Image 1 (cartoon, rainbow, N blue to C red):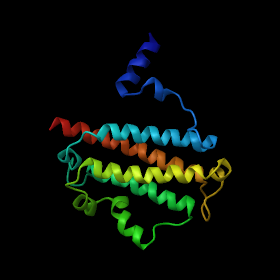
Image 2 (cartoon, rainbow, N blue to C red):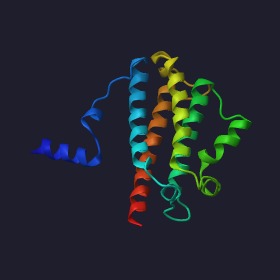
Image 3 (cartoon, rainbow, N blue to C red):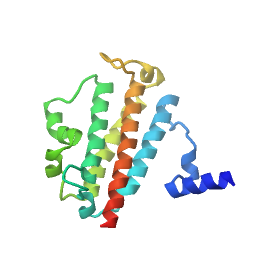
Length: 185
């Protein structure tokens, strides 16, 4: 009976048999491949939560201090882009990149004004491009690099990409809360 209860809970949460195994993504070293498998699973689940939103849903605010779903997707893309630069080039954003990514990275009042009146596909396309670059860059590295410290930092590359993953998982919960509230209004 316990196995059936666990299965039903997982089914309700949207966890499928396919997502209950973790295998390194082919073409990558083992640790990087496992991380990519988790990153891609999170991205797919977040995308599934938002892909059918109309602009009204993409722009929905729970309250005056909340973030819109579109802004949160932009935030995920901006954070991932930052960690690309940090781990692969050992730097933060340059002046051009600050102009492009900083509002999405920081969110807040400026993001509430800037990220509005665009379809969810606008934000997902940006995140898809960032992820495509992440996958290409990680393909050039191995587990030795993954375990090496980021230059000038106490963290290693593996922890940096773990942080990107757990950051996305945290925002997935926030996004799902928002989308549930959209449907109740």
